[in-house]
Length: 307
Ligand SMILES: [Zn+2]
Image 1 (cartoon, rainbow, N blue to C red):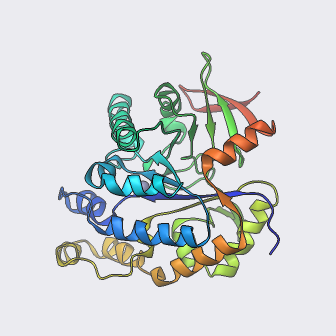
Image 2 (cartoon, rainbow, N blue to C red):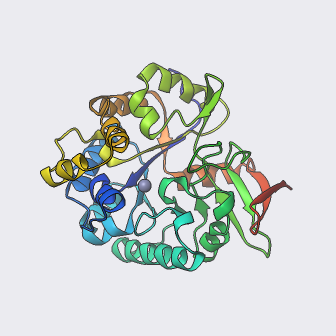
Image 3 (cartoon, helix red, strand yellow):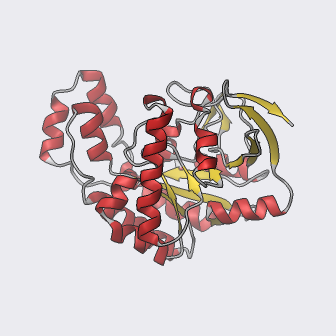
């Protein structure tokens, strides 16, 4: 397959078990060791392909497993921030979000002894109603954000946001680069075909076709989570808690396991067939070539204007 433009391979490093236990069952517990073993498997795969990726690490995971974050950096990858407590931005006040983001950034920067550049919000929750987060990120010293899904989706999405790396003028002299999630047209719908659940559910040929369609024009933003390659049985306490959920919710959680066993192999093919780099490197190359889209944004309304 022809190799065209370097794309970004990104991993949101979180533990699905402790987040589900909190969000579904109100049980607080630290991230489990599975986030470590699954991230190790991804590090081995990236090493096999001599590929560098961007790991957006949850502050809670970094605090619990600081050596994991050091290993990611030692392998030459970029580390970014995925919030501290994994609460969607619209569930927090701007003050709470500031506290959460600063805490995560401080924890991670202390562990790796270097500055982080990028941020990804939990569940892509930078959207018109949370556009206040963009100036907050710029003020905290982030140079880029990669949280915007430029589609109309239920709980996330910013329809109309450009499908390209974009420099957002936040007025008052501030700006931030957005590397939005990649979407492509499938069956009359714009879908994020190269990430998460789509990567897991789609056959490889469909993912590759979507990848090529996007990659002809721009870098693809592939995203995934360590738990997406976790094929081990869930712990008993989790399975017991799940039995108490209403049927639909139970089915939804069970559906997250479908095709998990295929993900590692699909990633192996993607990494073999295309060229990837860290988000920071891709953004630097892109901006140096003067190719970056420009928009301005009214942070009060989230309204976009092409400038
Ligand atoms: Zn996440």
